[in-house]
Image 1 (cartoon, rainbow, N blue to C red):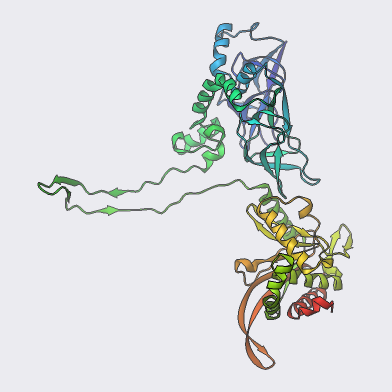
Image 2: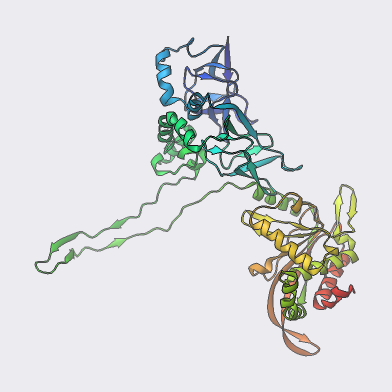
Length: 534
């Protein structure tokens, strides 16, 4: 009985695909769900799995363009390589080709049949209630590496955080997904050929892989500088040789994205003077005599472009910011704060504070305490919209915007209204450190009721920060600049900071927003009020 495999529907607007690389050869024995080849559309590359076990008969070749539903291959179910042969492969030829053409994983399976057990399939785990997909950030272990149980093998990015992926078994790692791939929760990411004897050394594994070395070299030769059919077509249209393009695919393979980003080098025309070299008779040096021809050199500036795939975090931040701008009635009100009282207090007590609490006394604790007092006095600033209802919070979970290596993250200080100055400073240091190391958890970045963002650390004098939905307000801090100010009829030079409150006018009226900001200003300019709650 034969199983016909046709090009599957891979998207509503996709009507045809190009056959990419075949991973199996005509006449090979294949297993159920084993990946046979790649199919490339104008949007993405897809893997074609075997729908049955048996002997493969290829009907479409690499580079062929097929319509959705077209026949691509046939699998003779129940047949084995010793029972079925194609005109181009006798059983003897099939056996002899195994050592050079069979993928490394199959060779290893034969070489290690006595030393390994089942194959462990690993899928993308559930990493949060609202997360439906992740991006494979980078592999920490290479394809074919020996891995141990619970060893970290990869990192995956969600729209909120980066997670480590531990090995679920000990054995040989086989990559299925590549770096940069976007995978749904539950999507296949890799396989591990489980070793029965977990104490096997890497030397013994290396010995078992010697049989696959020939196929590895051939695979590397095929991949390096080799363009996929879709990429080859684009390069041909642009008159660019595949040898001029550095591939980002597996083994250096040139992908469609690489081809689209490639640009033909701009020539630098020049008239080079002809030179005649004569050796000096006595001195051991060379004289260069040039003809009196004009030198004309025309140099063009670089016009290179560089493309990077947006990370899940960047895509989510972009989407949310546009949503906030489009769906909220956002306004910003401004004020200015004399920072001298806080700076004087810090100068007086910072050494004793650090000696006692083991952490520095920064501006963030003063601002956090000030907004907590003001939020409790003006509860609408601490509220949010939920459907047709307003939700008011009697607690203050303060989100702190932090610029992390992979983008903006907003960890949360829980119940900041009951925390002391040193507790706030310690929590800020802890969360900022985890943000820099991409170690923040989902729980640490969700549920804030109000946000603080400090553009002043980058030199910003004034800004209109965007609300962090579903919150209704955000306070922007800026740089401190000495300016002449009129104080009791006299001009004094004071360290001043502009502060900005962006708010959703659907929830917060002008009276509440302005009064809130005035109260924050009052508490910061008289910080002793924070100590006595007045």
